[in-house]
Amino acid sequence: MSPKLRKFVDRLPIMEPLKPLQKSNRGLYYEMRMVEHRQKLHRDLPPTRLWGYNGQFPGPTIEVNRGEQAEVKWINNLPAKHLLPVDSSIHDLRDVPEVRTVTHLHGGETPWDSDGYPEAWFTNNFAETGPFFQREVYQYPNKQRATTLWYHDHAMGITRLNMYAGLAGLYIIRDNREKALGLPQGDYEIPLVIQDRTFNNDGSLFYPRQPDDADPELPDPSITPFFLGDTIVVNGKVWPYLEVEPRKYRFRILNASNTRSYQLYVDSEQSFYQIGSDGGLLPKTVRLQTIAIEPSERMDVILDFTNQKGNIVHLKNDLGPNADPADATSDIMQFRVRERLTKEDTSRLPRYLSRVHSLAEYPVTAVRYLTLNGSTDNYGRPLLLLDNKKWDDPITEKPRLDATEIWSFINVTNFTHPIHLHLIQFQILDRQPFDLDHYNETGHIKYTGPVVPPKPNERGWKDTAAVPSAEITRIIVRFTPFTGRYVWHCHILEHEDYDMMRPLLVTDSSKRKRIN
Ligand code: C2O
Ligand code: CU
Ligand code: CU
Image 1 (cartoon, rainbow, N blue to C red):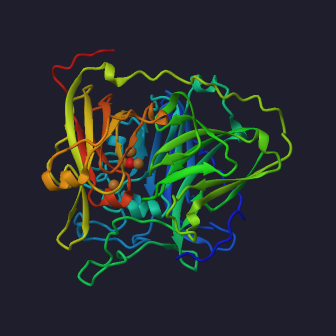
Image 2 (image 1 turned 45 degrees about the horizontal axis):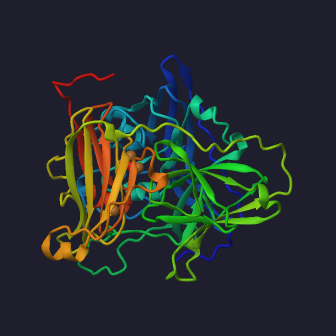
């Protein structure tokens, strides 16, 4: 358990935008160096040893305009020994260097050789590289619509540890269409990267060596089936506060936690006005009292403090009716609303935001039924799988370039899994509940309710979909614009590492007709 830390004593940091080292007609060129560093995460906590991009946690923000190509050289300058307990019993990690990294731009529409395939890892100064290593400098076309993306580590079998150590940051694409909407901007547009951590008394990060119910037969360290920290960190500070003016703000919210999902609300009983999700602006603004956010999802929201002059407002996390009152993760951060504006709020909150064409217009070439199911390994440890297959099983998801497919996720486990696909933003079609006990007894699906359309704030472009227990969640995906080797996985990092991740191979079609 973390030492008791006073809430709302540190100001919310805002990550600095990263300056390109070069700007040419080929686009922007950046370098990002992963290093071990120490950072003060709370007034009363000694500095924490972390791994950060350019020595920052979260990493500096990359900001680009749509259509402007960016190149990033991701450089590993990390020590040879991991900061956290590595379980080398999974994925045969005994045979590879302990500290490996590979960076993925989450939500980015990226050619596969720059996507950060888990086995495209590299060690300090590229001394050693994984079997799928492609290049040192990654290329990002940035042709997709304006949105909040994020970059993070994706190394095979240790993603949960590398990200918990601090390897994550934001990547924002802007475009003129969005600028023309007149949304709050500049000082009034604020990113909120929400994470949970547990600290030791000396300020170091705590991550379990073994699951709590470990028996001596288990490998030590052994992977945990999930991890929930007891302390909330926003933009790298524990339970921070932010002084705001009585006006509208735009918050780009990212859940960068390993396992934890949040039910966000504000205690002033105000509504959130959600304008965007993973892949950019929604068709229209959605008013919400509570926002559910799974790991890796982004929610772009407007909060209006105009009528809160002089008030203290908290961003909270609803832990539900059975919550332990001592659970401190019901608080996220604090807003201190000033009495006065520095200048008049001329920003707008439009009702209609963008056009999102429905993928259902395309002919569907395949429907895949994919279970999310539990199993156990040789040690009796929980092993969560996609379609009952492990990472190393032969590739089964091989859509053709430009094909439109429906993926039907059948969750027969007891919890929600946030399912993420690389390469392309997709759409959620619907969900339908079924009788899980009946399924477990007979292997048959008996529906217990009607087909439910996606929630209003899920009716835009998504790269991660909440797939609840005992429901079938259907998404529609058009596999474009690149062929190559990608992945799809659960974004609960402890699940992703063991073993809820599968390759995704987009193949070239010889008979391919060019539509555009
Ligand atoms: Cu956020 Cu495969 O990643
Ligand atoms: Cu991703
Ligand atoms: Cu999962």
